[in-house]
Length: 232
Length: 124
Image (tube, rainbow over all chains, first blue to last red; front, side, top):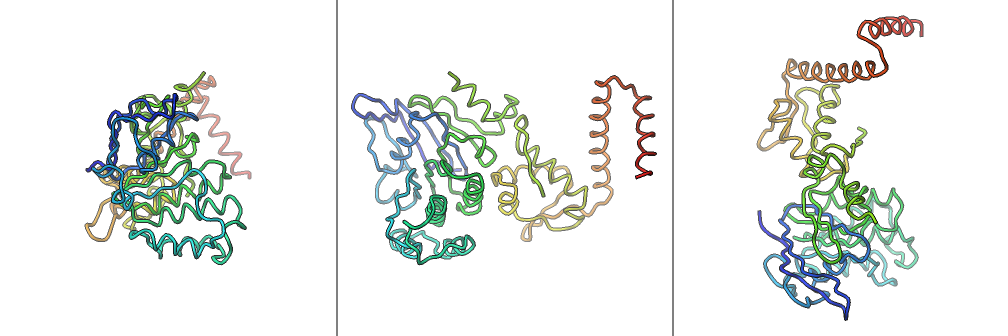
């Protein structure tokens, strides 16, 4: 078992606001991990630090043993919270874009999923529904044979059927031995897909445990535990 | 197959129960090949490692065996499957009796009720 993501006393400050206040976290390979916390707890900041989109104020983050760089980006597949694909592109062009940028892009996998979805590949992304855009972006993200998938709110703001599609697409496509980090506050929906969960509160890790251990020891779901932990 | 998971118990144990039921009821017939781990995971909408864990327990309990290159199979030991069916039936019966007791029915009253219902069923 090898470590794919490691944070040591990781801090991030935006002006006077401390988004992460000393995160220590180690994630092993081959897991699906839920990054859970209320709005503003630091989920997106942590993901952006791991992806090299932000730089730490203090402490460090290591991906596959290295600081975020061109090399780590080659093994990290990132799904941003908002749709980041250029809107004028068609699905076909977006696929080409991914193929040009990423050595690990599995075009056959993307084509297969797009075909099963019945998506017209010559239509510009801007003409697609929100749900379809989300699905396309997820397909492209999961079609990479990455070591670490960072999915920022992949199921936020979509209907339950789309949510189901997205979760099954994640399970079916992440490469074996890779780790998938999913940030969300919709815990009940993802719980059974996760190996383990990380609870973030005000920029710090307050719990890191396996889902089945929580259910076994507490006799309740992660969703219930979360509601109790973060109740006002 | 319908996969529903309760919030108060580990998912792998519930998966174990689902798979056992599928074996006992013949959805997965004796000696038949089981779907691959990833396939079962996608079908049930659960984590592949959880499926792996449930299958390992089934293997340990002799309901499933694996062949190095070709995958996992349901045992062809009919007696072992029958034994598991019996165990499940006894569990359900015990739960039922406990529920009847809560309603104030003793064993005799419960049996009388069942007998009466057997008559009803015949009429249907």
